Length: 380
Image 1 (cartoon, one colour):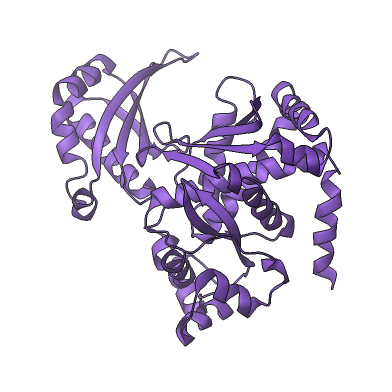
Image 2 (cartoon, one colour):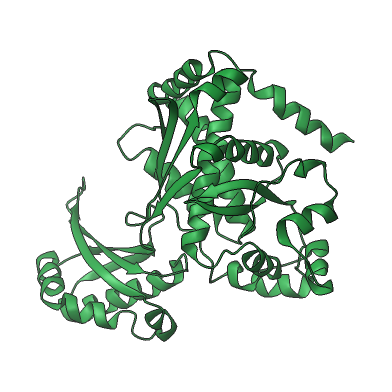
């Protein structure tokens, strides 16, 4: 792909931005971008009680270098500073290697709550695990043919203050390019029926967990200390102080992580994903040690300000809105978002980019300096 470095994109017309980021567009594709790609009749097939279409701006974010490949990111957000901040952060790290991202396999998990005959349930799962792996998703031929499979079935006793003892069972499934909630919920309910029939137990429910325990995307980036200090003397030291503030103060960590979520949810929304599921997983990860913590980690390493994070991401490219929204389909084609791995790499990079920009702004000129200047465009 040609370079994603596009100078002065914000100063171009909408038509010029389309050409520079998406290339030549035919009349149908232009129509999708002009209307948002969603008619009332199409919307009525997606959700309930439709009365119209609610539109949000669709932006592109240039300058991203991810694993040495050039990418222009799609982003849906109402806040102009999120787009500008991500673009600027991506530009500043291009010469130091851009973003390095490693997504884990696309594993989504379903959890079941069980009581009664818990010992029998455990023994049944142990003795029948291979049978269960082969049969829980066998009806989903498209998934199986694409490489989907049950990877593991775990169980653990849950602490409980009552006399009732509970067992939690976790079912892990490779869902390939899907987020996988419907896949794992169906498999979990099937497992529940099997356990009820074979173990004389009570299965109280089966439901996907948005904690995504087996689905982490790791991302890292380096920024030149020299360049940052040239932009604003003393910026690196104060940047790290602002980061330390988030480490010791959960109320600051919440807003620290909101800056990360700005980028992640912006990309996820543009690709038709369930942003509530993604955001709940991120907050769960932030609090997983018993105190709410920043999702990113920043330090000085030699001549660089180094940032890294491990995000529990499940940004999908098939299923739900990702498969049925014409504008999402156009973006996936034009921006080379061929699978969930690419989508997760984009979202993780945008998250760390927005986090860098927010901390750098707070540590230097203040968050309002650039934010309010961009905010004024709404009143032109």
